[in-house]
Length: 123
Image 1 (cartoon, rainbow, N blue to C red):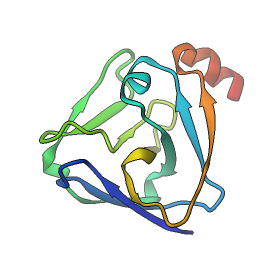
Image 2: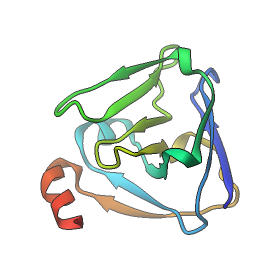
Image 3: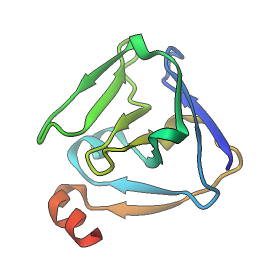
């Protein structure tokens, strides 16, 4: 499994993750993802490592409150978070990945505006 690295804009938050070579990205159309241009790369907890910045982050919740949106307190960038859709995983913002390990994942749309119906359809 290739290892990717990334973090926030100011460099206080830094992470690495092991990802499969056939990884795919989700482009969600919910309000927060649309406004921030977030591209989701979902990885299991066990494959994600926060290297720096645990004390430099803050959490924002809205709607159901299940997702934990984690932002750098210095620059405001959300480079990763715990998504509602994958409570045992981490969503990495592909746009915050510095070393992409040669990966070029396909992008698949995700209808986050109609979250309940979309999740039900996925099973």
